[in-house]
Structures are given as C-alpha cells and as structure tokens.
Length: 287
Length: 331
Image 1 (cartoon, rainbow over the protein chains, first blue to last red):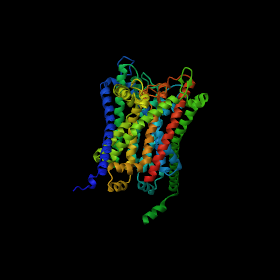
Image 2 (image 1 turned 90 degrees about the vertical axis):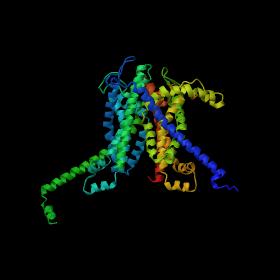
Image 3 (image 1 turned 120 degrees about the horizontal axis):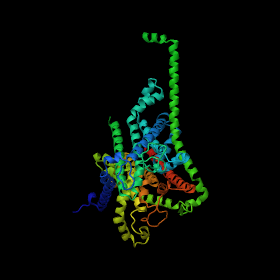
Image 4 (image 1 turned 60 degrees about the horizontal axis):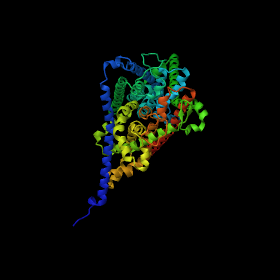
C-alpha cells in the first residue's frame, strides 16, 4: 500500500525544488559578489606590485618616456587630506554634538540629519563644481587650498554622521552622573560624553580619510595637477588620484605603469584605514 | 555635621564673589559651546544652500541662452557654442538602469544568504568583504575597467552578445555594432559592481531587523527558507529595501571617475548599448578644465545642476522610505 505522506507529495517536492534552486542562487550571488573583490585586488597587486620600488616614493612624476616616481602627488595628497581633515573634522564633530546632545529632539536636528544623509551620498563632482565657483573662479586660478576645501566638504557629512551615532550610543546614566555632581553641560560633553564615544568618533575620522584619499572628481578642477614639486598651496597641486587619472588615460606605457602603482598604493591605504576603523569599533563593542 | 556647619559659615564674602565668578564663567562657556555646536549644525545646511546657489548662479548664462531647449536638444558643439543636455542625461539614466537591473537581484540574494543561510562564523567576514568592495575608490574601478574589464568584454562577451542577439528583432538594435569594449554597457556593468555593496548592506540590515517571531511563525507553519524570505521577510521590509535600492541608484547616477574611464565620451544617443556614450558626470569630468568660453563652462555647470537635482530627489526619497521603515520597526 502506498501512502502519500506530506513528505513525498508532488506539492512538497515542488516547494523543496524551488527552495533548493533559490538558495543555490543566493550562494552563486555571494560568490559572484566576492569574486569581484578578489579579481580587482589580484589585478591591482599583479600590475602595481612590479612597479613598486623606492623610486616611486623618492622621485617626481616623470615626463613621458622617462623613469620617475610619484613623490609630488603623494605629498600633495597627504597635505590636502590633512588640511581637509583639519577643516572638516571640527565642524563635523561640533554639528554631531549639537544633534546628539543639545538638540536631540529639535526640528533643526531633524532637518540637518536629513540633509546630511543626502550630502553623504551626493555626487562628489558637484562638490568640485561648487568649490570651483566659490574659490577658483573668484581667485582666478586653481589652487591646493581649493582642493583641500572641496575634500573638507566631503569630510563633514561623514564625521557628522558617526559623531551623532556614537554620542547617541553613550548611556544617559553617564550624563546624569556628570550632571549630578554639578558639571555644566559643556564640560559634561567634553569630559564625559566625548571620552565614552572616543573610539567611535576616531573611527568616523578614519572613514572620512579613507573616503577622501581616493576622491578624484572634486580635485579635477580645484587643485588641478602639477607635474613639478610644489609646496605652494596657492598654486595647482598634484594629487595621487588625479595623476592616476591622467597617466592611465595616456598612451605612454611608463605612465600607465605608474598609474597602476599609484592605484595599488591608494587601495592598500584605503583598505588599511577601513580595517583599522573596524577594529577600533569592534574593540569598543567587546570591552 | 558640626564640621560642615562650621565650614559653611566660614565662607567669606571674597570666596562668595569668587564662586559667583566661576559660575558665571561656566555659564558663559556652556552657552558659547552650545552656540558653537549649533552654528556647526547650521553649517551643514549652509553647504547645501551654497551648492544649490552656486550651481544655479553658474548655470544662469547657459539657461538664459538655451532656455528649456537645453533639456531636450542633443547637439553638444563647443565650436558653435550650441549645447543640449539630453545625450548625457540619457547616458546617465541608461547606465544606471543597467546597473540596477544587475545589482538589485544579486544584492538581495547576497543579503538573503547572509541573513538566512550563512553559518554564523562566516557572516562577519563575508559582510566585511562586501563592504570593502564599497570602500575601494572609484578611480580604481575606472583603471581596472579600462585595462582589464573592457578588453575582456570586447574579446569574449560582446561578440557573443552580437552573434546571439543579432537576429532577434528588438534585441538586435540593442546589441548592434562592433564590439568597442568601452561603452554604455561596460559602464553599466562597472556601476553594478560598485553599487552592489550598498544594496547588499542595507538589505542585510533591514532583513536582520525583521522580528524573529514573524519568521519563526512562518517556519512553524512549515514554510521553506525561500517562502519565509519571499512572503514574510520581503513584504515586511519592502520600504527599507526600496530605500536601499534608491540609495544605490543615487550613487550610480552621480558616479564619475569609473564611468569616465569606460564610457567612451560620445555625445550622441545610440540605440545600441554597446556603443560609446557619455553621462552627465563623465562630461563634466572630461571637459570642464578644457572648456573655453563662459557659455561652455556655464553649460557644464548647468549639467551639474541637473545631476544634483536628480540625485537629490532620488536620495531624499530613499531616506524618507528608510525612515518610514525605522518608524515601523520602532528603532
């Protein structure tokens, strides 16, 4: 006697087949997504590593057909990134402080959060146009300052977001304890809340640095590019991403090779920064 | 007690004045800090206002000259100074559509894998790996796309597409022409890889926010993993998923460098997605520093304004939807 139990009914078999099929798809999709990461990193290492030498860090960008390095764009990138962080971080942290501490339930906070989230993903090339209009067009020339300010505009939303999130996570009991010993609010924030949220706030800055160290679009028409050594921030300044852009699209093999090496340097720096940022937050969670 | 009382009475007039001074200083410091943070919060709004005003101001000459025709004219001729935005707008939209067609299903399936199937110890590493994909700067995708991906497409994928779809009525126009390697399709595919992590991580987050009771109830009724995902998780998180998708769309629309490398920079609208084209951001990136004449520069800024308005609307809708979901879950 054959009993059709639930487990062997055609309907059940059909549902199970569909389940196996879709779960298989999700496996394949994950493999597909991860393979791009592996592919991109492998190609970068393959093409960039062979060009990596001491000369890359000690010599200037060469004219076509000659040997050279990436010293001036590396320094240019570092300087502009440092200035951008120096301008953007205080603004971002203070704004995040207002949103999490003073005006947590304000209408202003609500509006700023909404706008900030939009700025966070707004096209960076538009930021370049904005700084071009207010700085380059007014001063009449491209400059390292304009590049740094345009990067600062990108830093601000990242830092605002993380500062607000991290301060919101600080337990209110800490604030109440500080208030109960008579600490004024400003001191309570700077001495208690900031310390409790320190790791998270540093993470925000690291993420911002990671974000801007690869930004190219806002630098194209603010800092422009400079083939020579220049520490004058009132003149065009070379930066790693812009040099990669220019060299990669050039027909010269030497330049293309340097572009790959530069790409490898940027990627390694960015990945290292984001991994450090992650470790910092992971530590905070476990402690 | 006695000690305290004695000390209290021992406070001299001078000490009281000191204390008042300290308190006043603290109160002043507090008010100053409060206003400082408030000003910084306002600065975020000022940045947005500055972007809008400067873009509108910069694009006025072009908008005055061309009026509404700027939005539907295809010509882009720096020599005769006739400019229209429709070709870059078309490229922006089509590349983004291709990107979303691929990235949305793949992203959702990866999120499903991460929340339902993946063993616990693997979840974090895979999640981080996908997020690292989001951290890679777009110029890296560009150089990789130009030297590795485009030649690969040109040699293997595009000839295949042309031979397979060459005789199918509608698709033959879509896949027409020689395999250039660079073009609309290549840009769309690279954009797909770039927005994939955004869609994945947001979908994963909203999938994880589904109350376990709901899923357990569905499993208890005998639902398969797929059925639970399809009929419980997805309907519950629909608003959030759409929000995540639109966030990815906002990224794809505004992405500049990766697209600039592989799009081919041709100011024309072609029926074939294998043909070179251009996008708004690629046009600006390529031509802005070389633009001579106020009208040319102004037209490029007007393109930037259009891009900003489009992405602003898309991103604002994305945020509203994510907020609606959060309100429902009660985060």
